Length: 306
Image (cartoon, rainbow, N blue to C red; front, side, top):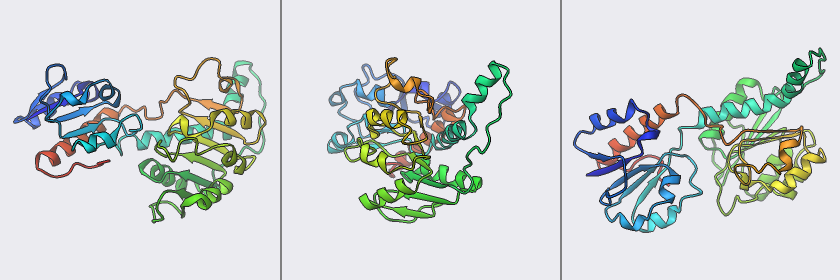
């Protein structure tokens, strides 16, 4: 059996360990001239740039990212190829990033950094707290659950979740579905957190109407995909102070053009699609690959199939 591994994502120390653990497998680290691979453990961006029809033996694709909106999963499945993603790898770091954005606004970090530069002692009274607030999280998967878990520790009053099917989810107080449910979680939110996958149903889900449902003092956090939000209207809402602030790890497009008004708004905090950044990422990917390879080689289904 021949398996391609994009080893730069595994880490220098981990790739040799994979080879050692699965010594009966023929691993390759290039796709050029290896058209007989059965498995690809691969980045989405690499997969996009190859002609999959050349790989007649391909049976399973293990993506090394959680998002897959840039991968035609349906087309691969129609060819009989299994596709799985890296679902639980980035949840912890993204959850921490969400708190960094909320606290940036609540504790007026930008103002105090400017005050330090100018040696000004000017306290702001009555800064907002997460404690006692209502948190609405669109998407109750691993990221949503890690956020909800931490919100409990901060003393949030209610944690509302929005998902497709009404089932209980750990750490959430209430789960809502459908258009009426979406309206409820948005209207109730002091902090509206977007952690949904991008697809036909979620493209521009947060449009003018949805933003109009938000409280004037609400904060929007988007760590999902920029296209889930109607960015043009979000800019207008922020300029008019219709909502308090927006913390964005994702934008439309990316990189965000220098001409975008978002750069210059005082109530916006932008990071360059980097919420998943962590020194533990490659180790977590390595452990997931080991687990899923073991399942596949034992003729069992890998985890996180799409």
